[in-house]
Image 1 (cartoon, rainbow, N blue to C red):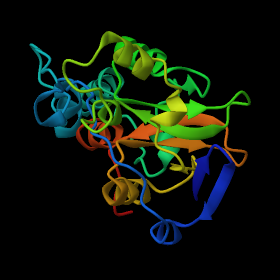
Image 2: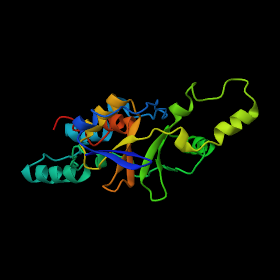
Image 3: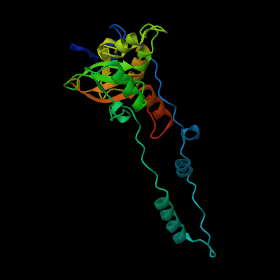
Length: 228
């Protein structure tokens, strides 16, 4: 299920297909730093388990069936095969430590939050914790929004003193925790947004799912099931 929230509350509730019929929100660039992963996204320890490789045990005597059974049991204890459940839903990979900003904050407050947390966007919430918009670093850097080079310092002060409501994306799409990851990926492509806030039925922000979260799931464990 997808929702659209703004300063006046919920304005849409429906499927991905229905969401595509409404107006497209403003887009912003994702600027998260790139994090290193293991080569080909495979943990060498897991590869060893999958291949069934185990350290050979030296023995001065021929190995009989009893010994073989003991060795097999030891090998299974040493390298247990972990059950890996495919990731299909938003709540399988969303960030639960939500970095949000109050709708009463200023642009300067927003800049400082995004910079200190190292993120490119943050959901904007009202006093009740309900989603009202999305503050994106890419929008703050828009040449149409920034004061002109050489502008008087007072102009810059006025810009930084603006309310985040003047620069945030609103109304903005959001998604329920049980939605299919493929639907989220499709909406991100359609809207150009860097991610979606994850909300409950009342619009309370419970998490955030970004492009980076989806890409990270593709190359790390457990597997991402896009076609199940």
